[in-house]
Image (cartoon, rainbow, N blue to C red; front, side, top):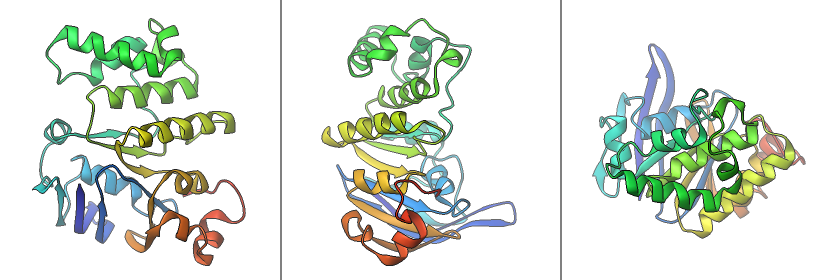
Length: 240
């Protein structure tokens, strides 16, 4: 479904990605792990059109999309759920969901989709008229995920969905990801909890200093000595 081929990207004169190649099969959940500053979030920005690559190409469903604007990429079916949730704090829960549905012209269709999302995220129904800025961190994360789902994307890009959440809320995020996986939504996941990420994902890539250094089925990489030492460390959580 998604193919990244020899992508390089920079912020000014600072190189962020170098010769990155990866692929995501349809209906698969793929995770990307690595240390802080490895380039993981930068790669998601390249895919979603927020950053144009210096070299290489990005293909989605056989169509080259690098150079497309973010709204055009969203219309093609890729939705980016950003790090830090990025809800609109002065808008209500319902208004935040309406913002996510901006490509849908039918108000009735938007309302129907919001109602269906409330079935999947009942806490958001309870908080529907509450300002998003007054929600707890876990509730804001559920809102960010629901907002990403309202367009019914073909592929979801998740950037650190459990960052800053208490362990019990991390478990909630994991259950949401597993539910989306069961619904066969294609997912590319960047996640600071490497153990959880590889529990959820079918396949994993390891990134260091802007390059992919290791890849394989998650079940295999979880047994790799280098991965255990650098990212798992015998703990349930590590910074990536």
